Amino acid sequence: MNHDCIFCKIISGELPSAIIFQDERVTAFRDINPAAPTHILIVPNKHIASVEAVEEADESLIGYLYRAASRIAREEGISEAGYRLITNTGANAGQTVFHLHVHLLGGKMLKLALD
Ligand code: 5GP
Ligand code: ZN
Image 1: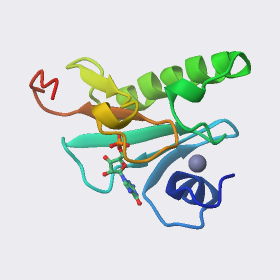
Image 2: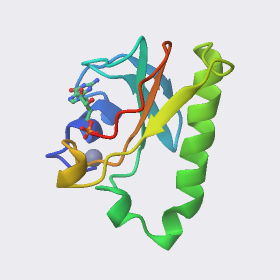
Image 3: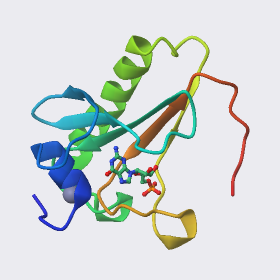
């Protein structure tokens, strides 16, 4: 738990959010500023600042996080139509919250916007 991190506060319940799934390893909640009809953030409960901070011991956690994303996409009813998973890493990618997260975006045809 990083006390300066808003996602750590969401995971602990200190900061309210629309949590749709939580277990001992990951938490998923709706993005406060959705960019698509479905816009969910999936995060490890462990504070990892970004992909750059992932360690060997985290490898199974990252795989678990992607499997959670797939399951949530199915529950949201967007699996068959398709969806996008995005992880911004660092300044040039526009990462604003330095707690690793995967954006799950879907519910409409997404443009392929790289910037
Ligand atoms: P990034 O730009 O770091 O990839 O994405 C951060 C995301 O977190 C943004 O899409 C932003 O809307 C979302 N976000 C920032 N603060 C909060 C918050 O307090 N609650 C929720 N639910 N989402 C947040
Ligand atoms: Zn954190």
